Amino acid sequence: MTVWEPVALLVSGSIAATVGILRVTRDPRRVSTGVLLLAAVVLLGSGIGVVVAGSAPLVVPRPRLAAVATFLPVVIGIVLLANGIAVIRKEGRSPTTLTPVVVGAGLMLLSAGIAVVVVQPAAPTRLTWLTVLCCALGGYFVAHLIAFGGYALLYSNLPDRPQADAVVILGCGLHRGSVTPLLAARLDRGIRAYRTAVDAGALPVVVTCGGQGPDEATSEADAMARYLATHGVHAHCIVRERHSRNTAENIENCVRELAVRGTPRDRIRMTMVTSDFHVLRTAVFTRRLEIDAQVVGARTAGYFIPAAFLREFFAVLVTQYRRTHLIVATGAVVALAAIVVGVVPR
Image (cartoon, rainbow, N blue to C red; front, side, top):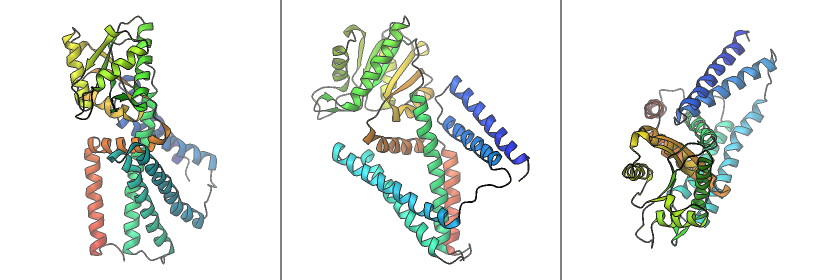
């Protein structure tokens, strides 16, 4: 080990951390900032570890490392399967509630492949190379998941802005015409943001967003408005947006409602309230639409966190890092083709 190795890690980590902090202070609504901050943590941690270890780094026995690599995915997979089953029982079947089951089953299959490779002879086989490829892709997605989840939690806990023309609360469905616990958490968080703005001397309106489903007797916006009125928000401060069906429509229709009331798009200062797992994707929408908005997150029930964060993570993967994903996918296809036709050692 040369003296330059820890120095390079520490300098690189410090640069990444500085840039990440500057991005958070200037405009935190970039998902890529989470990746930058994760890189800073890894680089700084590695640099500190190298300095502490000195010239005699800690050596982990190979059998123990193999055991951890084999059984850790099994443990995580079982936890996700159990969580998915519990969520399905409470919330019913949906793409969101099925996500932990699918991911958990995938991790257990990956662990089985690792176990087979561990007991194989030293010479690489097609199964070995295929497992290595799957582990590399898994590591790539796990890194993005950690960056996304960590930054979503950081972003959702940023201080409320004291000045806001509107506090916008996004709907998330009713149950038999009543506010669900998940939606109630958003409404309570919105009331907090509203009171923060009022205490700072602002006079914001509170916009409730959500249309009426075909099997619902009332719109989400109306049910949310009733909840707010019973919790101390004056009726004349509440604006009901009853026509949106998704997040993008929530934002666009809300901006239109405010413009009708005399606040033009380019002058709106908005605090938008959703669940903590949903803050980053909502923030990306507001940034793309060039709206001055801070998105704050309401806490999610513990049992629902894995399903919600995994669902949002896959949604973000579809909309973010497209070029990076394309490069990785192309490399994976080439590697898989090489394994299948036998170009790699057998």
